[in-house]
Length: 584
Image (cartoon, rainbow, N blue to C red):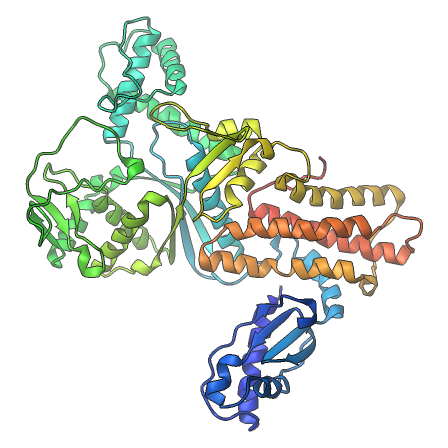
């Protein structure tokens, strides 16, 4: 399907060179001009400003525009071209061509605006990546929806996409999980146990009811056979159960990962230590009590906030292993191995991304919490230090989510056991509402998830409003079938200005997909979906099909139009991972 801005951009730039060849413009090296949607109808559908050429051509912008417009080639999608002061070239879509695109939309169907942007390229999207310590919370769910939508848009743009989940089932968090489940198991057996106070961060403990339930389940299965065991078998049992819970929760909103990558495999294969040795051989690693130039400073732990677990353990001061990340633009060198001999997250993170690149991906996209803003750059520096293509790594940083009920924030904390889970949200609203509300805001902005709005069955709820457009299209075809009205052999020249208004909006979908992929901004598709519905509903109310005053040939043309509109909505909804219902 034609992406009109590309066509018009090409025509404008070719016309500049043609004008120069004809002697209508002097010889100079012109910059590539960019077409933009017009803000007012009298300015056409798209326009380009030639003012940047004025100094190069030593002509007035209006004269340049007139010279260029003379050489714009005639193509089917252009109805007319006009010049406007102070130096604009306005493109008007050929309305007959636009009407005919109704058939092209129907022909492409569920592959509407499938692009070749990523043909032959492999992309990986890593998202969720929560360690298996508890159910998926609202915050993690935002990353899940954004990541999966990004993957869908990449696929629409022609990439071969892998969805990956990165996790660690070892370390302090998992030990806390094992000890917490052991306590709940003993409690289920009727033994006297001590449950640490939620406010006591020196005694880490997962307080969620899910572990009470799991402790009772384990007691029912094994009786008192595990009373003498330490935390490890409880960690293994809890990990398996929680991972299945996470997978099931994600499936409820139509998310399935292709690969689950365990951080521990990087140690088992010794990839972590090979990467460290390689960095050291290249001169990017040194051993010291403090960073070079700051001999009195203590080595930091370098733990992202969402990976840190409150603990009473301390690391003794001593010689740490440092990465000279300042050589790549970092504001300070980073600890890779603490004085205790334990790697920070920096070292395995770099090793993990070396592994990703060695698997042959052309584009890497990580969906991370905003507190990873510095950490991912360090990983990129590490890749460059290893002569890997760090520019292949791209990150979508997610801001926090607030859940609102009755206009008040619902407090959430995994360790405290105070959270709304993804399952809770789905049960209180719907899978479609969860996906849309967690997507429909720029990831750089904090998101307020309004539970009260998400459950409304009215036009106030954007989910209802968008899906209702698809429902209305499906409904008119059911009624047409009952009356024996078909859209066969429709004369699309009978479509009016209202229908053309929708088709113009429909043709923006290709550009939305492309910009979403190029800029890693999947929220664009949610914005577009609502704009599309805003254009559609007034048209549906006014452009009747099954009415006694509508001539049969007009009814066929309009029915054909609604078939195309239904396809556009279905495609848009599926790109967001949402259903396209026929009834409501």
